[in-house]
Amino acid sequence: MRWHMAALVWAGILGWTAIFVAGFVATGSPASAQTFDSYRCADGMHFILAFYPSDKRAYLQIDGRAVTLKKSLTVSGKHYSGSGVSLVMTATGVLIRHLRRPVTACELS
Image 1 (cartoon, one colour):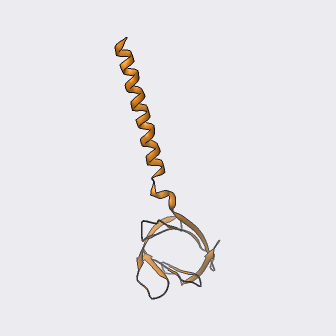
Image 2 (cartoon, one colour):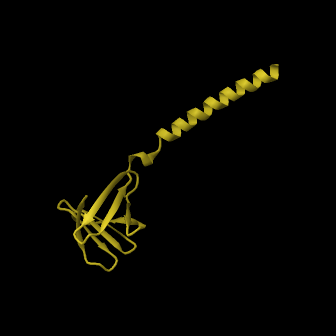
Image 3 (cartoon, one colour):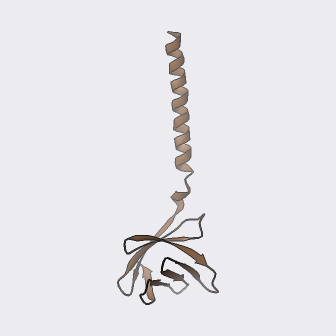
């Protein structure tokens, strides 16, 4: 009988500990603060752009593939590039160049 009671006490302690840890991990996730934007371009191309607050890179979903763009220094606006894609964000709009296509103006959709 004593063994059974001790097992129940330990099961209760471990159960509450697991619930506490799971709740802590779920609320402390930095991925919950990401920003996703969908853009449509003048040439008909569309893409999804994501930013994470703790990361200086931009994450792009274009033509069915994921591309990570590194931030570059510019005088005006923000410039990101990588894997044949260049993205320029200014106060007037967004420009993208994808592989060998010409530069295209894009807007939020």
